Length: 278
Image (cartoon, rainbow, N blue to C red; front, side, top):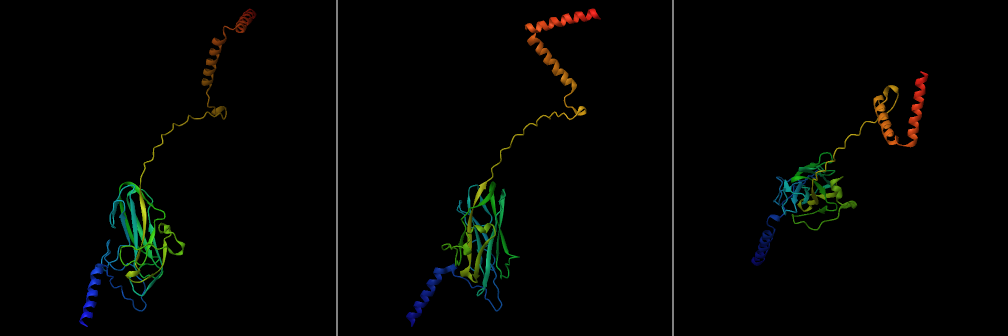
């Protein structure tokens, strides 16, 4: 009997030492009429802490090798991981039609704020009309924006700790890219720690490129439009000046030609005759 008791005690101590802080705490006990409630164990934590939920939204800089935090710093070209956490904290309840979603701004700036949403049809504290929300901030070293990496979203359901088992395919033929649009339907989530989970995805920091200014083109001269005698755009002085220039040019061009000389002679004879008549 003593030997058996010692073996049981040794096994118990070994299990306790191996589990340490990873032993799962108790969930909120349900009673008749209990309904699901999400992420109820506060204060929230960025790291695994006994009997505390993670933040709904956490971010880490994969390029810099950082840990999950909020806010985080980043440079253009960095790759970031966004993690959305959920936990139905009421045992023996089921959260029906559970959804998560991220609002990821596409605008440029040096401080980008994204927001995560969590709700279920029958959750007491996270309804479709009043979901749980959490914002996360990325501080950029220069102007830039966040670009979602298509196909990067992974689902890690039923996690007892933060080591992330293999990801699971999304329900209802979803790809995961819906997280930044209509949201992802995670289906039914049972109550207690072992059914908590994460949805992670990546974004890329895109640096802002200042557009090259386009030089201004000079305005074209106003068109000269003739609409009538009172609104003619070409003045009489302009016409007379242009005609005089043309006449002088033709005179010097043609004065030495034989036929032009004949014209001048005939004009002279005509003029002399006119004087005699007058």
